[in-house]
Length: 109
Image (tube, rainbow, N blue to C red; front, side):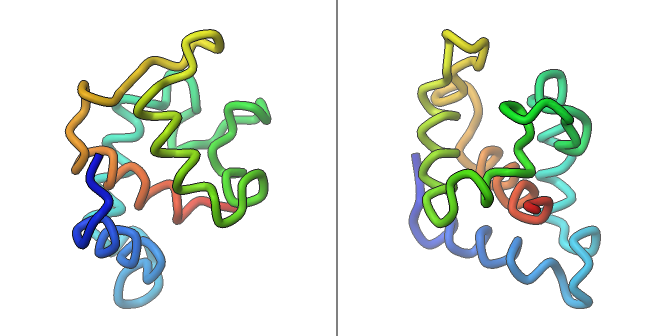
């Protein structure tokens, strides 16, 4: 999967959260939120709000720290079939996954 210049731009856009600091003002984050709800919310909750800790993606920063981006890409690419997580690598375009990641970065606790 791509993790070059475009990935850094998307990652930085999520960190900035838009001009006023509000993630809703950032179109990449809004798109990521919509894509997340389309592809991921059936297991991880609408807008990533999931009370079940193992599936709560708002806790990636708490659980994995700086390694969270690698965990995200590995998990999404390879899936976790034994836990019901499908393999999205090769199914979803990397640009879709980058937007989902940008959204997830804005909801970390």
